Structure formats: structure tokens, C-alpha cells
Image 1 (spheres, rainbow, N blue to C red):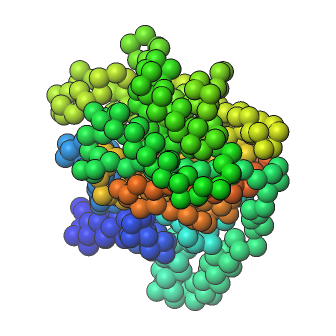
Image 2: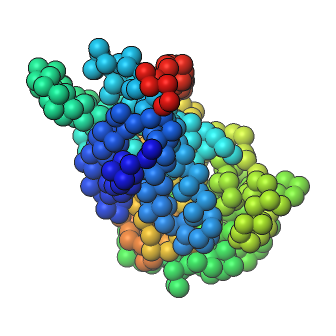
Length: 511
């Protein structure tokens, strides 16, 4: 039977985890949250563990995904939070079952490792399924201001999550051991926790240029009225980005710019088919005297559209043969799976009149840069793609020398969605060893060093712009080089541990 203590513990743990993420940003609470769930699950029956884990997940996701309520309303927000909470329910069920089996009792050190492995396995699972997955809220994304973020350079986002949760579970296991009188084990674990926490400081992060420096300008056009109707104001959005670009160059008349970057949806009307939009892009490119990387829509596929990144030249034409099509359209936002069924629960699905079709080429654009006398390879990452490990990893393996995260946050209002995304962009910079530029229609836009530091930033719902000297880099980090096999290894180990939990019969047969 579910006790009030366990239920409240689960809810409290989820709220503590929420506090680790932007805009609260107390990263230490991610470790505390893992410790709380570890303790609350100890001694629970499997079905109770499922409920406690689910309460933990829902308590975390409801406030963490508040931006979904602002964008699409209460029913989709609740449905997403409840569904994502099931990943923690799975952790609760499996961990409670293996604890009650007694198989880990003689080996106390195994318990935190099993817990952390199940946690990361659940994150990996929900990052892939259903409908391409939803990686938002992975523990690592809360840790970008901690020393543990450096682990991303070595083993990617899953390793940061694993170490974070392992620390929390180990602290909890040490406390339980001390309470049971196992002083040597408890104190030894405490020492090990300190050593693991300090270890990332030794990792050799490097932000120096390896293949030259690029002068990159960026513009955040902004929209009045918080931009919640931005998709019906396409020409205004594009015009605002032109105004921001011209204002930037007027403030820096002597600046030399190699590339201007505009965000996703900055030109929702394709300038290749619309002369008025083409003229606006041409004015922007001529104002900076350089190509403009921008986001638009391509309606060429029958019955659908591509969300694309293109390059517009000062001569008034698109750079031929250079186009990136978003590979991971957002389910229920850019395309609607099971539309006829989902419509019964929310009419918001009809706001998506034309589904986005997934592209099938890597995030790689080769752009000629006159001052360098060569093409520079840029990795355009479109909006939610920054949450998916493989998109950025694939970009740098294809030669991307810096990353440009182009995003449109206009429909999310004054919420933490954009700063949550900024944390992901910062972790991607560390993971790939690439300078990263996050450019949004309404903010938050930021320039990020290859070591994850924010060098320049624009706030939400302001018109802004900047010019950054971006170090170009070609060396692959261990996470970029081995990220695919490492991800598979995480998945296989998590599956083996989950199977072990399932086949372990609880000592109490009624569990």
C-alpha cells in the first residue's frame, strides 16, 4: 500500500529536481533529488515504486514544461507531463523490485550504480520513443554550471546524467549505511563521492582556434505582444530582423563581418519564391557585406514542408546547393501523429496545417568565406534538435567548425523554455568542443565558447544583435568521436540491468 510518506517524498523529489533547471538553476538540487528518490524507493513494493516514480516524474515535468501550457494549452501540457513521468515510474518499479529481491544486499556499492543506470536508461528511452522521442529535462542539462558538465567532453550527455545521479544515490546509500551501523562502508562511500565530484576538473577543455577565426554577426528581431501569434506575422518577423541587422551595422560601421546568422522562422516566407522577401534578405546581406544564414520553409514536398536553413548572398540570390532540412521535426508541434485521434482531445492540432517532413542529410553547410579564402563548414541545429545527442555529434563528424543553433521561441511567452534550450546549447559546446551561437527570433540568443561559457547574451523579447569572433575548430572530442558506440553501450547496459531487475523475484512474493 502506498504510504503518504512515500507519496510526498516522490512529489518533493520531483520538485527538487525542477529547481535544478533554468530559470531556478540550483544544479546541486539534481543530486539531492536523486538521493531523495533513492531513499523513498528503498523497501517499497514494485507497484508502489511505480507510483512513487510516476509522482516524482509528474511533479518534475509539470513545472519544467510550463512553456507547453503557454504555447498550446492545458490538455497537451498535462498529457505530455503525465506521459514523460512514466519514464521515472519505470525506474521506480525496477529499482524497488531489485531492492526487495535482496540480491544487492551483500554488495552495497551495487545499489547506487544500478539506480543510476536505470535512470540514464530511462532518459535514453524517452529520448528515442515514441515519435522520435522527447529528450527535454535530461538531468545533464541542469548541470552546465557545475564541474560535472566537463564530463560531456568525455562521454556526452548520458555520462553527465549518470555521474550526477550516481553521486546522489551514493550519498543516500551512505546515509542508509550509517543509519544501519555500517560506519566503514558509509564513510568510504562519502570519500568516494568527493573524489568523483572533483575528478571532472582534470578534464582538458580547450577553446582555442584550430582553423582560423570567423567574424559572425547575429540578429534577434523580436516581436511585440510576446509573439504568441508569430506564425501569422511572417513579414513583420522578417522585417524586424532586417531592422535589427541594420541597427547593428549602424552601431559598428567599421566592423568586418564574414557571416550573419538569423534564427529559425526568421523568414517563414521562402525568398526563393517571394520577391518581396528576397529583397529584404538582399538588403540584410548587403548591410553586413556577407552571406546571411537564415531559417525558412520549403513547401516542395507533396503535402508537407521542410523546415530549412539556407544561405542568402549579397548579390540577391540563394547560395546554390547549400541547404539543411531539419531532421527531427517536433511531434505534435511541427507535425501531428494520429491527427484524427488527437483532435478529440485538443483542437490546437489544427494550428499545424501542413506537417513538417524530416530531412535526411547531416547538419552541415559549406559556406564560402572571402576573408579566409575557403569554405567554412557550419553546423546548423534547428530548435529542438539541440536536445538530441546525435544531431550535433553528426554535424561535427561531418566537419562542422562551429554550431549555429537557430530557434524560434516566440510562442512560449515569458517562460524558461528559451533558457532551458540555452543550457542545452552550452552543454553541446562542451560536448563537441565547438563555439556555439544560439540565435532566437525573440530570445534568448547567446554566443557560447567551446568550453560552454556565455560570452554575449540577449534577453527575452528585446531587439538585439552582436558581432562575435568565433574560433573555428576541427578536432573531435572523445564524446564526438565515440558518441555513437557509447550511446549503444549505455543502452545495452541499461537493458541488461533492467532485465536483471525484472527476473529478480522479490523476497516478499506479494510485492
